[in-house]
Image (cartoon, rainbow, N blue to C red; front, side):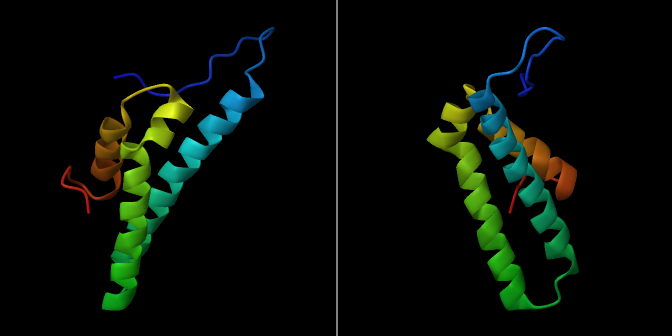
Length: 94
C-alpha cells in the first residue's frame, strides 16, 4: 500500500504546497486519533454522539475528493481502515 511521504534529499526541497497538503492529511489523522481516545473516556451519551459526528466528518474527508486532490492518491479508504485498526481495534469504523 502506498502511503504519503514527502520525498526529499539533502539537495532537493519539497514543494511548499505538497508540504501543506501532507500537513493537512496528517492533521486529519491526528484529529481522528485524538477523538477516538476522547470517545473512550467520555461518560456522557451526548458527548459521545458529538465525538462520533466529528469522526464521521473526518472519515468523509478520507473518502472524498479533497483527500484525493491533496494526496494525489485514491487510498483514503485504506488509510481510514488503518486508522480504525489503530484506534478502535477493528475495521468496522464508527
